[in-house]
Length: 392
Image (tube, rainbow, N blue to C red; front, side):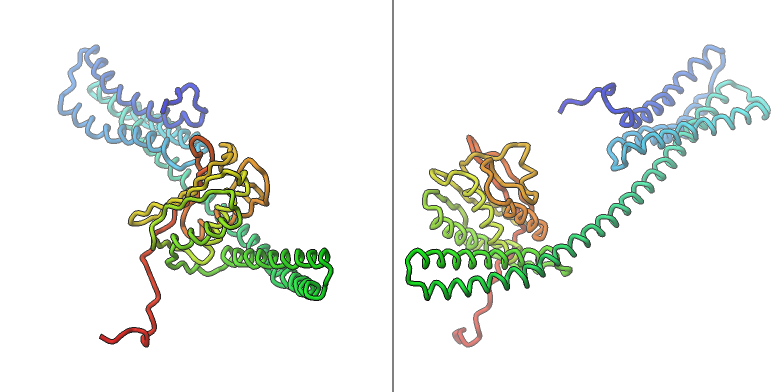
């Protein structure tokens, strides 16, 4: 990856380089001292130079590391200027105080003593200021993150209250109302003899059953997303779930070709809603493309810890600018805009519950690939009743 030239970086992001440059300037004071001392005809003892270097060099290296660390830290660049202000202000104040002390104390025998004194105090002031600035910036960042966490918690609580309200509406008003509609439609269907009217009653009955199924599905989703308790994840056989959902869609969309590559008895940590996740993704691939000639391939790869499922279609694909947006509520999956987009929103939400992930990539030469990664679970099958176990 090409590096951005320093001249093109935002001003705040140049601060770490400024701190590292300061450490480089202080490092250059060693050869400068040697040249000044030699120009004045003085001789600096080797042990004195080595001692001063041993005392000062760790602070200079600490300054360089501080700038390097700051560039890669989580501290907001908006705090950088205050950090560098602490660094330079502390260096100037400490050095200024010691310059005054130099004038009021008995003079030293050699010029090198003043240079070493000033250099050490400059390093000490800059290092101490940098440390204070970083501590202050981290404290401000922690406080800001804590405030954001409180605000986020309040927002989540409010959203959960809203979801619970909608859940109660679905439970009492919509579900009860559709039960009445379905019951009346069934009576009409049984009593009507006219072919057209009987067919209309049958349509009403079918749609009322579909609405009841959708309402019950949404209730299960809301319960999973708003529950205060930790979701009860168990070992779910992914292979069986995939085959069940694919078989269901094969009968609904006979013009679409489905191909499944999955080993038997592949278990993941999930719950009963996993079938809805897989079903929604498969349905999304069909409904947002032309089913005629569409080819959908489902494959599963498992390792010791994770199971990766790929749902590959040969449809129109998803533009790059919409690859993240399609998981938001109200967005549809592919270029062909049909449906509410709830299926992908639901799938993404359930990945959070399952501690998994979902991504989308392009299919070559055309189409989309949904990649679902779940935690692998050990195979768990219920023990047979004791009376069915043959004695040994």
